[in-house]
Length: 319
Image 1 (cartoon, rainbow, N blue to C red):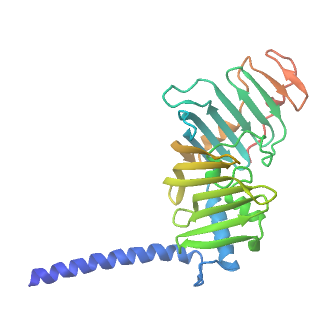
Image 2: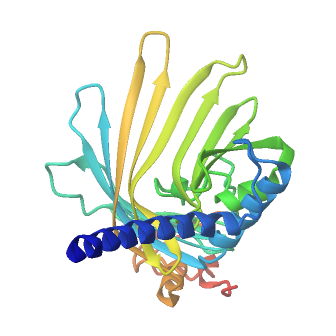
Image 3: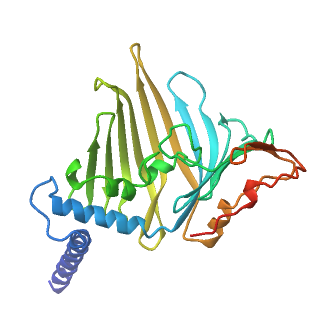
């Protein structure tokens, strides 16, 4: 009898501890947001708390470096292809290096493309032709320029409008919608415009990491032209309290009169680093010896052994 009572007591203690831990986890998410309303749709005050928390969490990342593989599978029967990316960000500075896509059953090509925005100059380089260019502009809203974006960019916000904290800072609180999908752990933020609709699912228990992102591009008549769905399947606590995606899938569906075209992009991270001084060195790129490039700043082609003063010799200071 004594043994039975002891066993029952232990089971009770285990159940009690599990319930306590669960309540603490939920409470920790709720405490940071203050008192929550009973509705699934967030109030203005709650949205402001969410926005401030996202800004606070993303501000913990001073710089970021990610090396990852991208495997693209199309629904037209073509074999899947693969490329290797290296992407880094620090403030407004960007670095992107990538191999060119090859079938997954073939070794990666040695040829690579490089694009670096160091806060003052945008430098692009192609290793195969040993040629590049220099510009003094970096317009992230132009879809064709710059070339510093990568498939990982959307993991932090959007492709062209910056990370999520930057997007939410630009938009008035009453212009976007927020609803709980798993209160108080996950919340869905929605922003609708005549040209496209965007939704982010935010994981409040993983430093406001984006766990899902969707974007619908619409015609001037409101018809959906394409639909992008990014889903994170694996993540990592890179440093205490800072979570980032390490495995995800981006499905892009293009709609036309005849049929829909589907592209699946699997992103698998090999290496991820944050807040390290070594990352800053990536933004100080100089063209390899013997490279030829066009300098748009001075309007001249810089050839090997040229005596022209090169714009790229002027290095901006780190902020």
